[in-house]
Amino acid sequence: MNILIIYAHPEPKSMNGAMYRTAIEHLTAAGHNVKTSDLYAMRFDPVSDRGNFTSMHDASFFKQQLEEMHATETNGFVEHINAEQEKVEWCDLMIWQFPLWWFSVPAILKGWVDRVFAMGRFFKNGHLYGTGIFKEKKALLSLTTGSSADSYVDDGFNGDIAGVLRPLHRGIFEFTGFSVLRPQIIHAPARQRQEILVEELEKWKKRLDGIFEESPVVVGKY
Image (cartoon, rainbow, N blue to C red; front, side, top):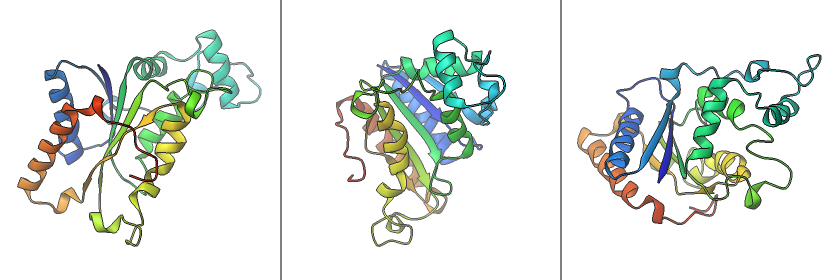
């Protein structure tokens, strides 16, 4: 199967870095085709503006979605954005690997979405949610948190993790048609013993072995 991993962490020695490398090595060894986007290593520019496009539909007033529609029709995305779009179109499964920052993804990953998930190409009227362009694809969030697991429950300090992740699961993945798999979460890795982190990597490998047999979750209820 074709798997795309989007990695957003500035430190290669982090637990996110270990999860990223483990997924690449394990999935490749299992015979899957793996492509990646290491956003910090790429120095990906998260600012979405006219620089996304090779030409303009309206040079006097910038409206991003209209320009995205125009670029979709005219093959008008700049080369490095088109390359990222082609990776998403190619994959059967997309994995995001990132630390939870301010109840969301790092800015570099959000900017990647802003620039890559273009109207006309990734979504349009009549092709949203259940009829979305990527309805044959699956997506999975793999992340770390700064706080312990008991902080991310209904009556916990930060509230239910399902609610925290819902804007990503519903507003990005399901909106464009992806089926959502249960998130892979490692809580407070900086406070864990090394042997616990090694166990987490083994759990990740085991899950990846059967990832294509998993059923989607109901967003907000996992």
